[in-house]
Length: 193
Image: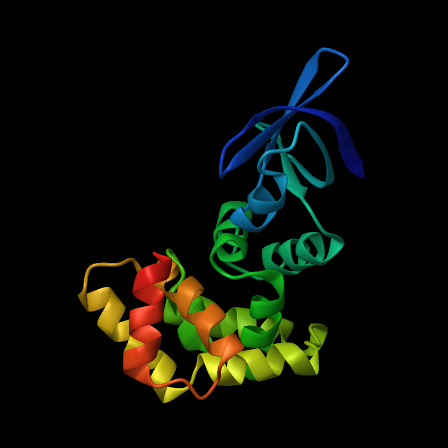
């Protein structure tokens, strides 16, 4: 089993990284959580999870051990395949996903493309006892699910911004100032997008 791959970063897209080792390019499927730290780098070291079947040999790369462990837990849930797990990790940072599962926030999981109500509940039930988020991630989650956050998010999506981009901007704003008013949060978010 391959533990990690390290070498020249030959190509990088939001979904794939090709690492060149001695003239051989290894194509690894990655999430947006792994893509971000690799941007503008010429060398990379990715932890690997490989899936070998009769008809395919796929490599999945991760920037952190935490993300790889979450990926492995997710694919262990009935009905969650490797691509679905990667989509979840692209939509929610590892610490956010831990908090979502620990707090039973199925709504956030249902917001991920391809995740329905039953799958979201199954992920939470199967993984709740296996994941222990830190107190700081629980605090961030509490502020992110406040009424003001939800109102600001609804307003931005009505203005035509995607939910994911809006959430990312608003989370930064609410982490910096949890008591911010809705109108102020929307104005700040508009300057960030």
